[in-house]
Image 1 (cartoon, rainbow, N blue to C red):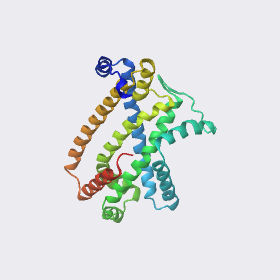
Image 2 (cartoon, helix red, strand yellow; image 1 turned 60 degrees about the vertical axis):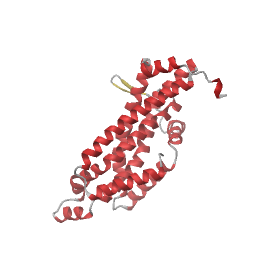
Image 3 (tube, rainbow, N blue to C red; image 1 turned 120 degrees about the vertical axis):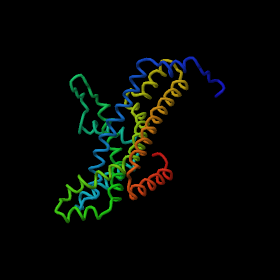
Image 4 (spheres, rainbow, N blue to C red; image 1 turned 120 degrees about the horizontal axis):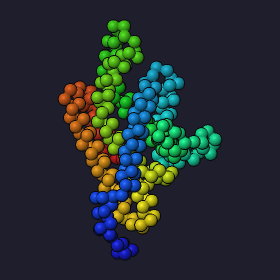
Amino acid sequence: MLGNIDFDGAFFLRYLIDPPSIVWKGLGLTIVIAIVAQTFGVLIGLLVALARLSRFWILRQWAMFYVWIWRGTPILVQLLIIYTGVAAAGFYKYPDIVIGPLTITGPMQAALITLSLNEAAYMAEIFRAAISSIDKGQSDAARAIGMRSLTAMRCIILPQAARIVMPPLGNEFTLMIKGTSLLSVIGIRELFGTMQNINAATFRTFELFLVAAIWYLILTTLMSLVQRRLERHFSKHELPAEKTFKAEYKERSLLSGQR
């Protein structure tokens, strides 16, 4: 069966080196979706982490339930439930949202919601662990001089936690880039969805998907280089707690593998 595969080297090189504009558009859409979803995921994840660390029982339980649901189910299942289930139940019909020259379609809304909420569950645990690693004596000292808890969190704890979170944030963004490939199932023509469309017209499956794999590899490699520079920058002034957190995070990542 494999012996019948006719690899077209010229076709492969043309789509890799000088792809048509539709491929560049799909690549750009992949990057935009990843950045937007990661940004919202970080913001929502921070709120969920603060809820998990709250002194209010109801907030802690809600945050635990949120993390349990979103981390415990496959993102593809989440995407299909949010896109088809929410509309079928009549909660939201995903009308097109027009913002000036920009139109956000229904599938795009569902994609951004799913990726953001899924990422928030992972970022919440990263933020929670980072905040918990900060010496509790700093919070006690802030309260001793009359500083409110929210002020201490905003001015003392979170800036230190942000420095600890930076390396795992790079890992999460790398996973986000690769996760956008799932969006083709709801009709979004990001990089992988674009390649599927071209494949339907050319029937050059292996060549096209190999090109897609190389482009994903390029994007994740560039992100890895940025992450290394950030790690070197922040490691100049990192505290012992930060080193411990980073070592534990890397160990968990090696044990659990990619999600």
